[in-house]
Each structure stands twice: as C-alpha cells, then as structure tokens.
Image (cartoon, rainbow, N blue to C red):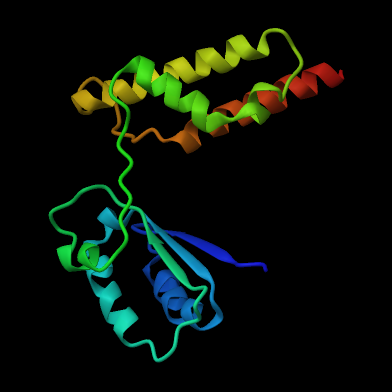
Length: 169
C-alpha cells in the first residue's frame, strides 16, 4: 500500500505547515518527518499536546523528528518515543567508510568514464575532511554551515549530470 510521507524542515517559518500535518496526518495514516527540531524547541515541546488531542489515529501514522542534542528540547517527548541516534563517525577513515556504505552501488556505476570513480572519491574525501573539521567548531570558516550527506549527494548528482551530458556530446 502507498503511504505518503511529508517532510517539513522546522525553523524556516514552516511551523504552520507542520501544525497542519500534525492535525491531518494521523487520521489518514500519513507519515510526517519534522527536520531540525532543535531550531524550534517550543514547537517540539507542543507535539505531545497534539498527540494527546487525537481521538483516533490510523495505525499506519508515524511521526519522525530529526534534531541535534539540545537542552531546550523536552525530555518527556524522548521518554515516550522510540529513539535512534546517529553520530558522525570519528576520523577521516571512518567517515569515508560510512560514506561509501551509505552511497550504494548505483552512484559508483552511474557514469562509465574512467575518471568517475576518482572524482567520487575526491568529492567524498573533501566532504569527509570538511565534516571532520567541523568538530573543531566554526573557527576558520567564513560562515557556519553543517555539512550533511544530502550536500555530498547533491554534489555527486551534479557531477554525474555534467559528465553524462558531456558524454552525450
């Protein structure tokens, strides 16, 4: 059966949209993913209130919240939740290993050019080096920015598109 998933990043004026889905999704069995819960602790603290007001929730309904650790987030919410913690790997080697495990074979086989694997490694290495560097804080960077796997994947997709379009010429 098809289950719809709605992803809403918090902290960017998306609270109204998140509230709308917290009210409508339980009735129809949709899944809701609230990203960056640490950016709006008061809203995250109100989530148990929304859940208590539910008269009936479809058994397929799921609510996911991604967040960084924050003392402002309510511990009661975590006490009634199933939690999964994903910490950044420590060290460059561990970061590269995890990157290639997550990446999967599709990306490694996406382009037939012999340079493709070297480019994938170079971009992955720069990403791993940059994320490892973030453990020292934002000193030395012009702007604070949290690098994520999505950033790496966007770079690789752009590189793939560029190489495939050059191949077609």
